[in-house]
Length: 423
Image 1: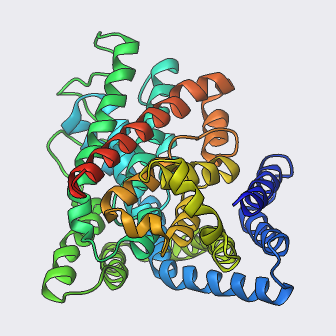
Image 2: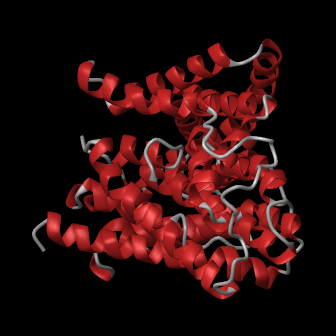
């Protein structure tokens, strides 16, 4: 166990240095990390390259349609100014800018298939809703909300690979019956904490008769903006119940349904802009995820799971192993999708995944993607630049809330594992 674990730690340090010090693109960091790990593990160069290509191809096959559809939907809505409409609708119904910001990030991260993309598109809108201090709070809440849905809700690029590798036939709908209330409860707790810290005055409240920045009146709903969301939701029971699709097939079809509705309702100019900008953005995301697939595939091909996990089972409670392993990967390179992809590939087929119920197993991995959102996390630095805050301010308003949320998710996973597996 010691040598493969030492090899893993050395490569994680290499990936961390490449990410933080050199600021190399994640695709190249992960690809070179995969080659480095394979060679240190005793694989031949040919074996390493073939394993990397195999992992890269598998991830592209799973994610290409999903990421492309989500990116095009997001960019097409943005090109028509409909993101403002979504925010306006939420603001009319929440009456509180902090709740609005958290919900906006939470909801928009789902069709955008990227929490950072959702945040970037919401930033110019949310940044003008409050004063200097409350405006920063709105941005932090949008960031936390986007991460919570992105790491916990099916279908997102974080949860999809977890189902593919660790789902063992579990229903995504059943998982969301646990994950959606849990994530909303966590988001509500974070919003409450921010509001309590700011005081219980009228700051952030909305006058019911106030006109909105986009000149809409209370009561009006921007159905055109919500249509892709509604199409995706409507397509889930259609393809899962009436067509009995597997979750791998269903996720492709429901995202295509959302894309078709978005394209049908878009103006010609917005449609063209959305396709061009969305395709470009999807390509960047896909390369990073494919790099994770290459890295995970090489780790599996090296025999790492067989050499390490049996020893970890004797040293740690079973439910903590996926959490600890994922948190280590997350700390090293910062991308939640990468952490989920690598963990799902490495854990699949091990005694850990075979011994745990799939729902707490997936929750344990998801918790590991949240607890260390620090210097290697690109979202951390985006928030620091956007808000102009110090590193400690970002830690207090982003890193710590997500750490607490991750620990709560882990506690839920531990409790569910005890109940579902009979203690």
